[in-house]
Image (cartoon, rainbow, N blue to C red; front, side):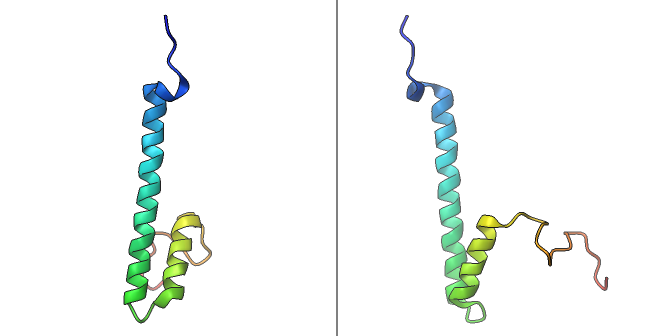
Length: 75
């Protein structure tokens, strides 16, 4: 009975395919943020770069100026 190598297992291929899909999505999202930032004069390159870094490294709900999604207006 022949054992499959680590790279030939279905689970390994599934995990690798998921990681590749996540990386492609992050790259595409970054390009969209960059394109919007560069085409919007109010944002510019600095705003686009800040958006990309915020998307990459920020934890939702943990930034100091984030009051959460259910904040009432006027509070």
